[in-house]
Image 1 (cartoon, helix red, strand yellow):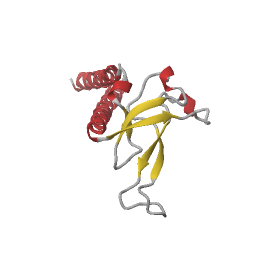
Image 2 (cartoon, helix red, strand yellow):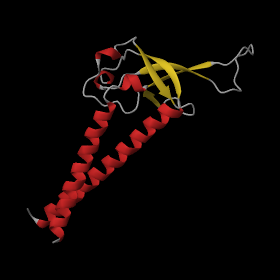
Image 3 (cartoon, one colour):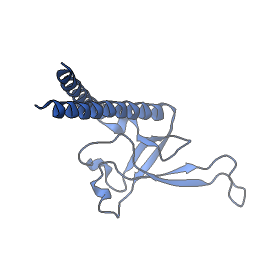
Image 4 (cartoon, helix red, strand yellow):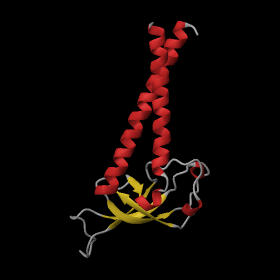
Length: 155
């Protein structure tokens, strides 16, 4: 392989692998944080009108979130609920599982500060650890291959 081609390939692979590992670590950390400190809720899977939305493996979820403490309705009777539409973070299978059919209830945890930041509850996530390991292995392999090419060029 030409020296320039090897150097560019090594740099691209190392950069891709490093960014992928950082992204995986940030997503795993965010999901664990939301599951530990977030608010539990039950969301409903919403049917999507957009044909491209059906291609996304993460279902579109709808759930209600209480408004901040200071907000009350015009009669002063309690807090108003706000409807949130979002997709859970960290859900990356190739196809959407059958249990996420429109209208199905799904247990989630959401960040009370940013309710659009929702993750599936631990029991609903399924094989999240296997998917995390797969992406981590891909990032590590790219990083190692890139570093190997760069050290071969440096000799």
